[in-house]
Amino acid sequence: MDRNSGHLTNEEILEENILVEESRSDPKKFGKLYDRYFEAIFNFIFRRTDEEETAADLTSQTFIKALENIKKYEFRGVPFSAWLFRIATNEINKYYRKKNKKKIFSIEEDLVKGLISEDTTDPIEDKLPMILQVLNEVPTQLVEILELRFFEGRSFKEISYILEISESGAKMRTYRALEKIRQIVKLNKGDNEQS
Image (cartoon, rainbow, N blue to C red; front, side, top):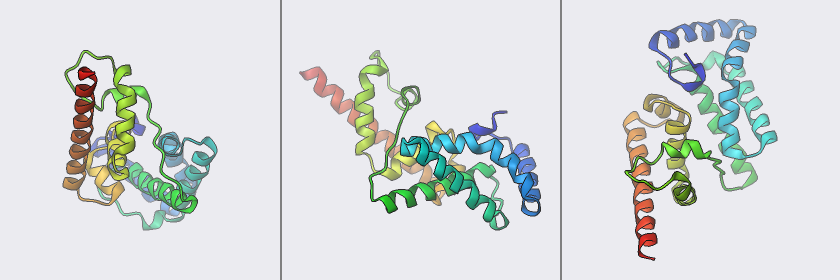
C-alpha cells in the first residue's frame, strides 16, 4: 500500500492511529510519521509555492506544528496525513498573506491529463495552455479542491477535513470546478474551430 497516496484501508488508518497515539507520549515515534509523509507534504507545498527553499521551510513548519500539537489531534476516521495537509494548507495561506502575493499552482502535465475527461482526439499538449489558463481564472478555493482530489488523490472525506468544509460541499465544489473548466475548454475549442 502506498501510504503517500492517501488510499489507506480502514484497518491501516486504525493501525496508523495507534502510532499517532504512541507519538503523543514518545516524540521519537513521530519520526515514523514524518518519514512516511515528508515527501507528500513537501511536494504538495512545492506545487503551491514553486520555490524549493520556501517549500522546505513550510514543510518544516508543518511538521513542527504537528509535533507541537499532536496532543490536540483528534482522530476523525481519516488518515493522519489529512491533518498534516490541513496544517500545510494553513501554513501556505499564512505565507501568502504575509508576503501579500497571489497563490501559485504549479501543475505537471501528466496530472492535468486526468482532469478533463472529454471525448477528443486532440493531444493533451494542444489543450494544456488552455487548461492552465482556465486554472488561473478559477477561484483559488476551487483549484485547491481539484489539486487535493486529482493531484493528491484525496477522498472527499479527507478534503472536507483538510479544508474544514462538509463532505457534500467538497463534492459540489469539485464538480462545479470541473464543469467550469470543461465549459471554458469547450468555448475556447469552438472559438478555435471557427477561426
